[in-house]
Image (cartoon, rainbow, N blue to C red; front, side, top):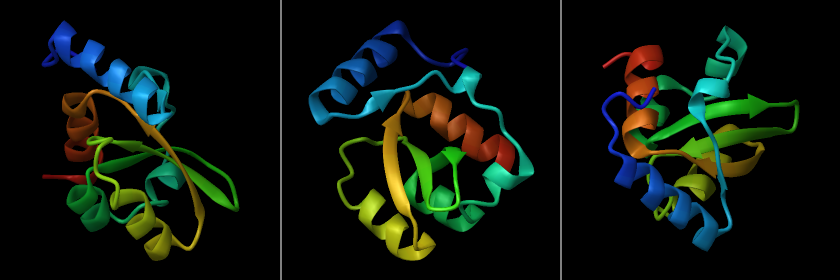
Length: 104
């Protein structure tokens, strides 16, 4: 992750996370399994710019490519029927994971 990202993107994403009360995560630390990917349908991941980073029976931790999209988490919660915990990472990293694991 991060080959296509500028240091400025990382810094701005960290600042946005702090201002919005979200956790900034390093996507390199996320263990991507079939069960994790099954938490969010591919179409929804592409449409909302989200990627799952952890889950339990009752909640899903979701990385937002655009932390300023205030409608993404409520819409996703309705679709999944689970409680969501929002996190963020640089948009280029989130988009790369979505393409890599859910297809173009």
